Amino acid sequence: MIERRSVRAPVRRRAPPGAGAACAAAPGTAGFTLIEMAVAVFVIAILLGSILVPLTAQVEQRRIADTQRILDEARDALIGFALVNGRLPRPAVSASNGAERAACATEADCTGFIPWAVLGTARLDAWGKMVRYSVTPAYANAAFSLTTPGTKTIRTRLPPAFGLSDLVTAVPAVVFSHGQNNHGTSEAGTALPDNSGTNVDEDANAAATTTFIHRTQVTNTGATGGEFDDQVSWVPVTILANRMIAAGRLP
Image (tube, rainbow, N blue to C red):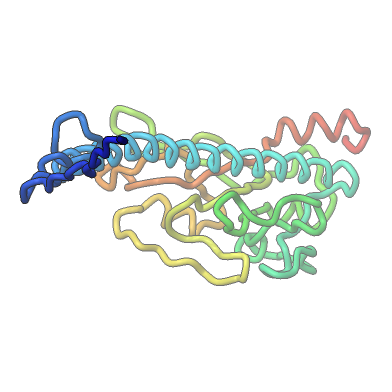
């Protein structure tokens, strides 16, 4: 006879209520608590802040350097123009027309924008503002000589009193930027506002036709002369004269 044996299926026991949750929260499983996530977000925010602040400063310094290069190139182009024409160019017709003005009989008429189309130089500084230009009328309206006097003066502030004093006098021409903040003219020809009441030296440069201020850039509104981020360059009369003599244009 063949013996028959019954085979029983294994019995599955149900886990008691709450056992699944206990397993999910058991030590060694992956995951973060709300406190851990908050700490992680806080640390990331600090790290990003420490990175972004230096990057902002680097971008600003780069724009300052780029603007100085633009001004230096404009100055060199002005000297090059004089070597060819025997005089310096007059300011641009307008913010949209980079040709020379027909004439500039007064200091005010001879102050405006760099004639970029004539010189082949940049029209804007690194902040997108029009590059400013002021030239002595006698240097712009006819051929000049070694005895032609420049009418522009560059002033600065020196310690300890930081009062204004002359840095250079008898300058033939000045090129300058109003910097990142306050004053200037946009590419569209719109006058940009002055949002400060303490930037005395910047205000002076914005209205200047003969006397310009060149000094260390500062953000301190309490500094003598106020905050200042203008960049000013000029055509030295000695360099202009030497270049003209070397080229056979003078005397």
